[in-house]
Image 1 (cartoon, rainbow, N blue to C red):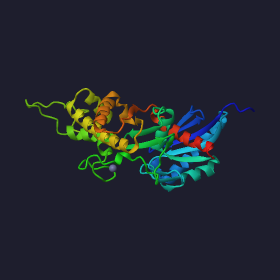
Image 2 (image 1 turned 135 degrees about the horizontal axis):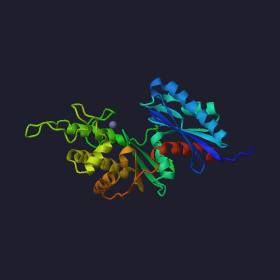
Image 3 (image 1 turned 60 degrees about the vertical axis):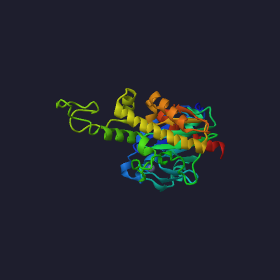
Image 4 (image 1 turned 135 degrees about the vertical axis):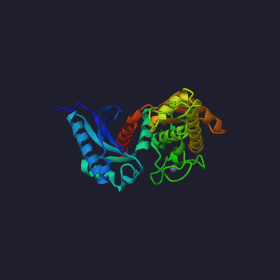
Length: 333
Ligand SMILES: [Zn+2]
């Protein structure tokens, strides 16, 4: 029987809640996607078994479609030692020094690469997405946290201990809110989506209920009726800021200023051509990019200003990056 398809990489992007999967051709074209629950609560051993089973299913799917699975790429969050193939530490998946690359290579019999989810996303944006015309790219993912990937000539720097790119933990406000890492004033404690939502809730908490005439009214800022409010999301804060609502504008300004401080530091360190902003908050469009661009320009003196652009690959970026890591091994055996 003739093999009609091409060579594909089997790619898995493991997150705290789901595993995004794809079969990706050597041309970077996605041939097939799947998504599976991670079941992180069942413990790291079960998560590893789930990953391996899902990868086996994908290779079977490739064969069934007449494709040749030639390599496997897995990306995970946390600290990843790519050279040794170790998932060193991950809070949301529970990994501690899991030799995931070798476990997968043994089970599947394919050359396997293990990578870091944000670095892989940055790699994909730099090579296939918003940074494809630039040789030096900084990818910044702004979601519940903030992390970055510095990509030079198509390779994302890992750092000596697999922990490069922790832009979210740059100190930007010495007396600022305490970060999840335990230190006050980290960038992500002010500008991550979760921080924006939290700050807005703080500022509007006392804004309710009585007017000067003594009548109760529903707060303009309350997400719903009743004493217990639903948390307003960062995207909604951005929308309210764009509409000129004052507490939202203040929170948004604080976040943009902190981001600009972080990006100015990053530019001083890396001097990139293009900064690609990804993650949920980057979807705020001009409401983010216009003030951020101005604030960053204010902070740069002799440094060259980078191009500031939104990511284009969406939540497929991690999976595409996993595929690139997998396919890169075939070129440099
Ligand atoms: Zn921190």
